[in-house]
Image (cartoon, rainbow, N blue to C red; front, side):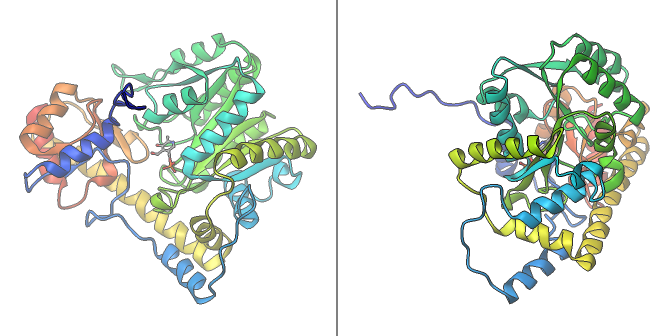
Length: 398
Ligand code: PLP
């Protein structure tokens, strides 16, 4: 029989499956809130002006496309460090952070996971319950056993902070803890700075390995505000991992622009860590692509473009917040009596709406409003034209 006769069909990606169902739905009023992307008020994926301007500059002085260094464009890695850690931070100046360009945030996570597996093959990984659906599979595919720490408290509509802290305190030394730096996906609930202080103390005293996933810097309260947690980890003197994604903040999803940074104790240590990260990259895809990272480096290092990016990012952040407020208002106007104000307390692109699987299914079948069965909706896919319809539909299923 054939070589592939025994190959089983892999499970469908639940969110991509939802997209297929959405595309096949003939309902003209249909709205896709299952996506993980930011759409502008006209329902389109934006091309940021800062990106178009950087690409124009690049086109005016076209360059041949040689191989990049294994760790990517040096100016890009430096710009990432400046953005994530602050160009004037002691760790950046001391050269004790190893940063490599990665294939989106996912690529950064995977490089870190493969490196960690070699460093400490027996470690367990803990992710939040719930978490971005790829965290578990990514770390499992890197060879780790993956468990969870409590995170979402459905009854209280917020973070089960006591549960989270207790789980961290009980974890054996060396456990890798994946933490959402801001704009938690899927719930939208973030920790307060005071709660981060407690998490950091717990991580430090238990000897855990923190891995911060920062996929939405600038989508919560601001670039500096969302990045403040990094400063808290640095101040605690911890060694830690940070994956960065520019997919959302630059609307460059398909370019696969991201990074991994590893904060070490000294420059010597960072040099050795960097050499190992490069080995992981070399044996996976050899070296990263040029275009997206060149765009991001150009924007971040050209003052006028940087300014423009910060304004455009603020515009996206503001629009998401307006949609949160508007959704709460429209739900009330549509007759929902329970307090939906929690939607405005959440941060980032997503909202855990609190709707049940049955309610989410009714939204799809009766109204063509597509969200994830968990109740997750993408607030960044709401706009002035679809919000009344969505609020009306939710009101009818509640
Ligand atoms: N981490 C989290 C929490 C995410 O939500 C996402 C994307 O949805 C990623 C990582 C992956 O980002 P990228 O598309 O840049 O690989």
